[in-house]
Structure formats: C-alpha cells, structure tokens
Image 1: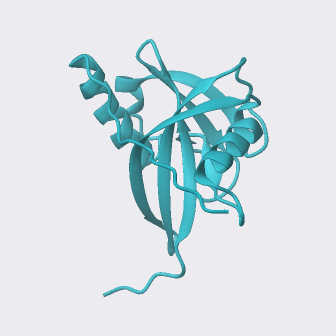
Image 2: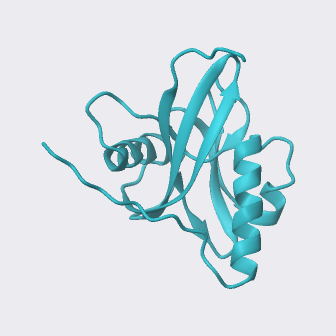
Length: 149
C-alpha cells in the first residue's frame, strides 16, 4: 500500500451551456498548461460553497450561483492526493481568465472528453456529462448543507 501525504480538499465549478463546458488553462502545478474545470483548494474556515465562489471569481472573473454537486473526483498526481468536489455553477456575468488561469474557453463536451490537453478527471466528467445530456438527463448529486456555527 502506497502512503500519500495529507489529502487536500478542493472544489470546482462546472458550467455547461449548449453542449459546451467552461474550462480554464492552468498556470500552476498541478496540471500547469492543461485545461481543467475551474477551481482550487478550500481555504481554512471556508465552506465548500464559499470556496467555489472565491475560486470562480479568481479564475473566471465572475460571481456564480452554486448549485448541486456534479461529482466527487479523487486525483493522485505528483505524489499528492486531491479530493475534488465539483458543483454546477451559473454565471452572473461574462467570463474572463484571471489568477491561476492562462485562458478560459467554452469547449464542446465531446471534444473535451477526447483532448489530450484536458486533465484526465475533466475528460471523464465531460464524457459522463455528454452521455447524460444526450439522454435528456442531468448528472447530479445533491448538495446538502448543515452548518453549526
């Protein structure tokens, strides 16, 4: 059994419009130079929803409405263990790349699922979304919040 360092909790914002998904080209490791779902690490004291909003503002320059969980991905890369909770998001403005993103683009789901310059977890999500949407369904796992502050 391989021992991984401490896991990092991350979030992503999944925006789908007209059969296309919003992807960002990463500046930093992991996945520098690759396209992926916009998002990043959850900071100390943040809820998942707060982290999604912050990351989307930093990487895409827009505020978002956070919806249901699309999926949870586990990524083991470069000796690190990432647990990523991806949420559907609705934009409240025009997208522009910023912060940790070199670029942002709307890419057809089927194309994104085949491109080698898209990270593997995002390719798999695009494949699942494409299949689900072609059946007239929505890929969804509900997000249930219970906060005691």
